[in-house]
Image 1 (cartoon, protein in one colour):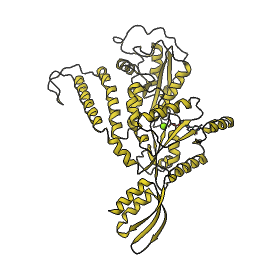
Image 2 (cartoon, rainbow, N blue to C red; image 1 turned 90 degrees about the vertical axis):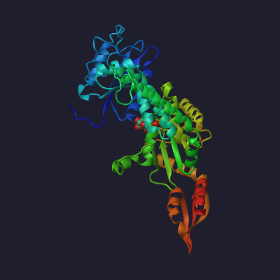
Image 3 (cartoon, protein in one colour; image 1 turned 135 degrees about the horizontal axis):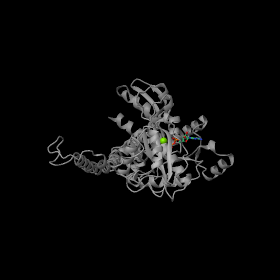
Image 4 (cartoon, rainbow, N blue to C red; image 1 turned 120 degrees about the vertical axis):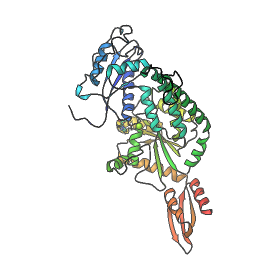
Length: 446
Ligand SMILES: Nc1nc2c(ncn2[C@@H]2O[C@H](COP(=O)(O)OP(=O)(O)O)[C@@H](O)[C@H]2O)c(=O)[nH]1
Ligand SMILES: [Mg+2]
């Protein structure tokens, strides 16, 4: 056995149905790979097959199922008595492009389409490890990014809706019990009980969600006193790389200064005065299952509350223009209209000089950079700070000795240009956003 890294391994499965080209399949697999990595798995390999449909009982044909099970150490077949539904239609087998090396055993199988509850169950029996489909992966990612209460509720609703039908299959509990624990109704199976609990919980969540309809506004008002920059764009644009580079997450992680580190919202590093927070939103996903649209949009709340939005695109991706259009449209749908924004054309290192010249003509106001070039990152940092400074005003404040506590707050919220002590306290000149200035003045007036 090879030494196993701490990251669990996943093996991916994809079906190439007749209307799908090989390129589309590869694109979809690449996206899934990134999503799976976001969840903390490494991808050990994949098994793909050309088939007339992805609706077959075991998804893969018999031979491919055995190949898949070699990655996981499972039996490679479902119990003979069950699920022998039809013959698995002529296996138009592709030659195996990846042969599994058993020393690279995977702990989870991830399928690049949506599985019915019985497909999921069949596959799990054949591979002997947990199976997750595309929707399951995406729900996991959303729940990590759900920051506001509304977003958390929205994602939990999506999760329960996803889970409810899947309970039917896993429920080994056919046995009817009466008067068991947990308020089980007479004659209710544990499965029925679970389903009832989910229904009740869903009802609760929807009520709660309706009730907090206007929390949004209070939140936004609060955020206006903080300077936040939200990174928005498709997966693979380079948002997380930018976030890491601009906030020094890597440095912090390396130094192990913090046991738990929220990597989705961090101050710019080295620190700035005033403090500027950067937030990494969940990326737009090309193949977003329809049921998840609402919860995806709810995770964009954090962008809608930001002071500045950076639209990040991979300028080396030929489809970046249409992606940018979708991004802008969806952001407008969640109420983020007329947001101050900057367009960031990333991955300049992958473009030739001619492409760069023509892009610069096409997007004269955009920021051109590569997250791999330190000088580009410094330039973006300057651009962000300059943007905020443009909105700022200079003013003189008098802080009496009795109000010294407020100084700490002033130091994080504003830039102090000069300070002068006198008999009563301190006179400072500050540069600040109008909103911050108002907050501080109100506190001083008290
Ligand atoms: N060549 C190149 N690759 C980049 C650059 N920025 C990010 N990447 C790569 O693009 C991929 C996606 O980056 P990531 O930050 O995860 O994108 P996200 O999905 O938007 O968060 C990773 O493999 C990065 O290493 C860049 O400036 N140049
Ligand atoms: Mg990312």
